[in-house]
Amino acid sequence: MSLGSALGLSSGKKVCYAFVALGDIAQEAMLPAVKHTGNSEVVAFVTSDPERARRIGEQYGMTDSYGYERGGWK
Picture (cartoon, rainbow, N blue to C red):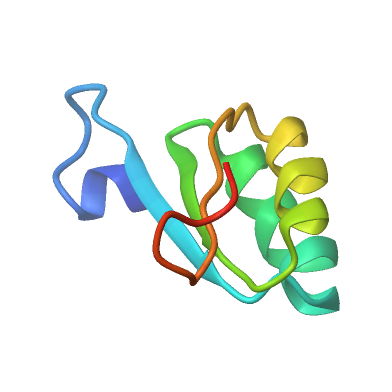
């Protein structure tokens, strides 16, 4: 049974993920795994490094990024 079926997502809906911190584990294991599934998408990052968020976000189709501060860094 696929994860999508187990979660009742066989109707084409996607599982959305937000990542808190973008260290080695996120970049080398978790993000590629989510991208590989086909039924999932990365929708948000929480990080204090705007350049890292932009760079990694481009790889996953994310166009907007915001920081911790009010107003953030878009």
